[in-house]
Length: 111
Image 1 (tube, one colour):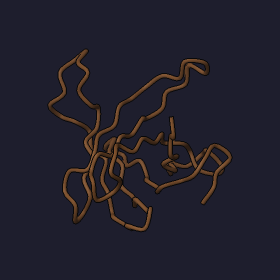
Image 2: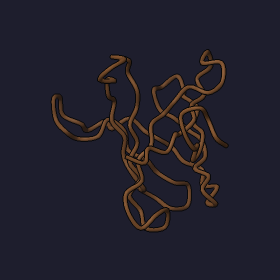
Image 3: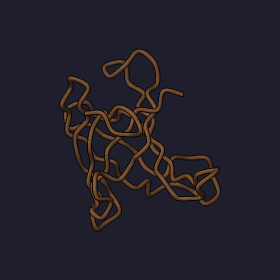
Image 4: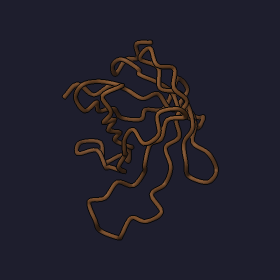
């Protein structure tokens, strides 16, 4: 699915506990969980979230960021697993359609 921002590589829903759950598409259709990193130390460069596939195990990480121009918060995702792509794959979580739900598209970041 194309969004006005770029190509979507999957979808996740934000749960009440601060974790996300959804699916990574890209021909994989892998159920994923983006879980809060409970061992992150304050002010470190460690990821805010760890990403796990249902059958693939640990496949990436994500960080809370603030947009340079918009100053809006967003989540930056990095998948790093050769079963997904031979190099790191970056994406940002973007609100879907109405922006009023807790559903997010993972928008491929080609930069």
